[in-house]
Image 1 (cartoon, helix red, strand yellow):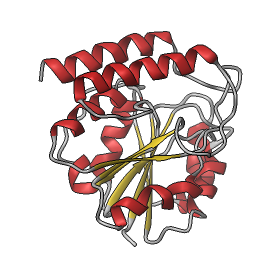
Image 2 (cartoon, helix red, strand yellow; image 1 turned 90 degrees about the horizontal axis):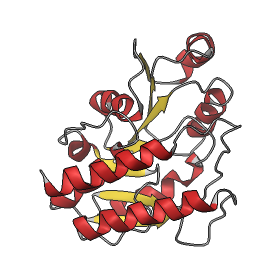
Image 3 (cartoon, rainbow, N blue to C red; image 1 turned 180 degrees about the vertical axis):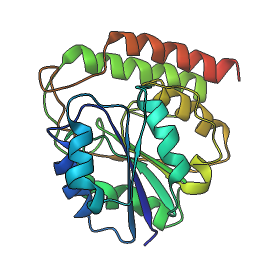
Length: 230
């Protein structure tokens, strides 16, 4: 089994970050490296990281200025040292116990990059916002038209890479534009890409969901920019 680096971008997740670390630690993958990048949290997350979580993970990196998810991932990828690298949000929307499902195509030497999908397979997902699902499908369609990939969920958090691949790609987007950017850049490489179904327990805005319509506009911009002008 390949070793795994889990990069967790974290911003104002005091209520959930300890739980997600505990679940990642129990995912059954070994060797396992957990890297948390705190993007200048202001809700007490930093105190939880320093007082409770430091001995439980491999590395915690603190941004002194809030920059966004893409910037946190850029930092985390740089510090990864294991064979494979996966993105894990610090909330409870995605289940780390499914890491082995994403690893399988790479472990079998069939894939170099594996995308998760909330819209394929029979795994459970929480029923939430209709227009979010419409937006996700539209962005995936627009991305597919320019990348010539047939993904079903370009915006899914779960993306796993061979470490040498993700560390060879320059990440420019600082916020949620990371998803279409990395998809465009991976599509241009001679990489074998797989997609596997994952479960999803989405949050409401009252529960801390951060992505909004402005991020959707930026995603459209990123789809055009990184596919047509690079």
